Each structure stands twice: as C-alpha cells, then as structure tokens.
Image 1 (cartoon, helix red, strand yellow):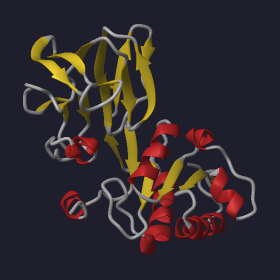
Image 2 (cartoon, rainbow, N blue to C red):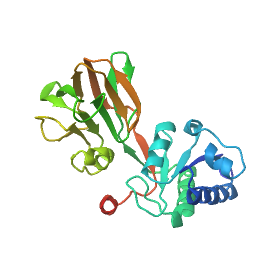
Image 3 (cartoon, helix red, strand yellow):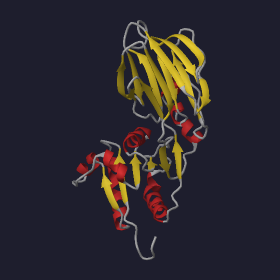
Image 4 (cartoon, rainbow, N blue to C red):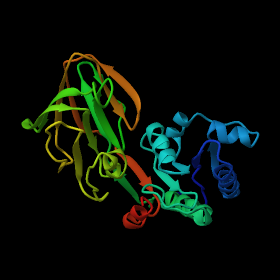
Amino acid sequence: MVAGVIWAMLVGIIAKRDNRRASFLAAEIRDSLREADVEVWLDEATADAHDESGHPVEEMADCDLAVSIGGDGTFLFAARNVGDTPILGVNLGEVGFLNAVGPEEAVSEVLSEVRALREGELPVREAPRLLATGDGWESEAAANEVVLQGRQRGHGGGVDVELRVDGSLFSSGRADGVLVATPTGSTAYNLSEGGPLVHPGSPSMVVNEMCAAEGMPPLVTDLDSEITIRLSGPDTGYVVSDGRAARELDLPTMVTVTTADDPVRIAGPEADFFEALNKLD
C-alpha cells in the first residue's frame, strides 16, 4: 500500500431479521465504520428498518468483510450467500459455535478486523462445506450437514440404503435416511440424531444413519473421504442441505457426498468450543 493512500474498503452487515437488538447493533457498527472511512452495506431488511437503501445479501460476495449479527443460523445464512468473503460472527449475548464476538466488543473487533485488512494481515480460518452430487445435479454447499432421506420419516416412511465410504461397503438396510456432517455441523442435526461431537479443528466428517433398522454406529471418517449412498424404494427421496433447499430425487438413485472446493472463511477470534457446548444443556 502506498504511504498516505487509504484502501477503499467495503463491509457488509447482515443482522438477524426482526430482531431489534441486532438491528440497533448493526447501526452502531455501521456508524463507526463510516467514521473510519469505510463503505458499508446493510442487508435489505436491516436497511429498511433504518430508512436507507439496502443490498441483497448475495451482493455482499463483493465485500472485503461480512459481519453477521445474530446466532449460528444468521451466520449460516450469510455463509450461503457471500462466497469466499470472510465472515465475522457477532452474537447477541449467547456464545455460539460460529459467533465468538460479544455485543459489547463488536464495534472494536470489527474496527480491528478492518485495520488488519488494510495492513494485509487478516487471519482467516476455513471451515469445510459438503456437496452432494447426482446424475446431472449438485446440491447447495452445506456448512453443517447434507441429509438424504425418504419422502417421510417414521413408520411407513424411510428408504433402503447402501452406504459406501471410499468405495467400501459400510452399511446397508432400511433407514429414515443418511446424514453427513462437517465438524461444525456435528453439534447441530447430527447431535440430535445421536451422532458424536467433533472438535471444529478436526479434519473429519461424520456419517450417521438416521433411525436405521439394523445400521452401523455413526462413523467419523477423513474429511477427504467420498461417501456414496444408493437410495432405493417405491417412493421418492430428498437431499437437503443445512435444513433447506430440498431437492426431490427419483428412486433408485446414487448420490455422492464430498468436501466442497470452497470452504467458509471465518474472521475474528475463535469461539471456545467447550464454552459453547455448555450452552447446549
């Protein structure tokens, strides 16, 4: 950077929808950034609450930094839309797995990240995403989990599953479905399905059959593993990424789950994994 020249910087702010505290904090961060000669975009809903023009979250892929204000759900919403833009997660008083910055230090931490960006020294952690692919289609990349399941869960539902890891047969039989989770996602849907907790620093993924009639225990395997699932049965199936964007599948079908090329890029301090675990009680 040339001495005396300030790098034009763009920061996007994405606040939890319909949450007054998140909206107020977004405005406080916005004002502090503008005082520091940083251009700021607010998401459309937040901007509307403050009587200014906003930007679709998808456009924030052009930002140098995205600030997510809310819980892990807000962070995941940002991650789905901002591409490889680093995301700084701000919580609203409850430490989450992805939101390590509390509301009291939010302004100072965002300004610290901006200074680091200007100096070209912003530290960023990468969290893996998963991608499901089939015959002529691919899912949205999932930061938490990819789920393959039958038309409905429980009695009268489910699918026949043949599950392979790197080409080797791991399990087969009747189940509600199969869940493949990242370390980040191990504390979400995977946990409610009886899967193991995985430290976010572990280069691994979890393969978890859902209510299998005679299945195997959940498997923690290498992050580079290729998970192949054959689904069959008289009904339709679905692939779901991070609890949304369900795609209907004609059965029988073969689906492959692998690590996506583009991870989530996380800025700011790292959350204390074990402190966040205590919030699950």
